[in-house]
Length: 198
Ligand SMILES: [Zn+2]
Image (cartoon, rainbow, N blue to C red; front, side, top):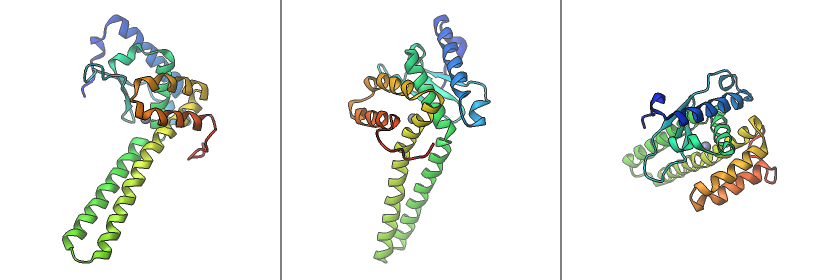
């Protein structure tokens, strides 16, 4: 997706962009990672892909990306999204996710080679089990990363800031994600044990 050249934003959007940049700098300043803390704030603004399908925020590890509609987001939502994405950056989640994807592809490759060698049923079974195991771990890791990004974000802001933000995110996401977000809130508030130590 191509980013919108910042000079193409409206005057009002340029003001909102400054608010995003200021919050990115302030929140990143609380990061335990020098890489996140010391870099210039980086934000790319993207067109909304389809009508009504906005509210998108993601990170490439170096740049925070948002859909254009989010420029005008409530400050609490803005800070939550920034803290969450910086949490991903701090934890190197994109790099780890990439490595996991390679591992899954490698597992798949191994299974296919074993399939083409055919015959030996027990090793075929064990290869499939290995592949399923790797895929399951990769899938869990993804959900793990979502929680972990919020936990890191809470350290850079506060638990209150993150739970306030989650309350604003919930109505923007599909109903099947509600349980996921309440689960995150419970973990942030220490009602459920963390999967990581800080
Ligand atoms: Zn995330």
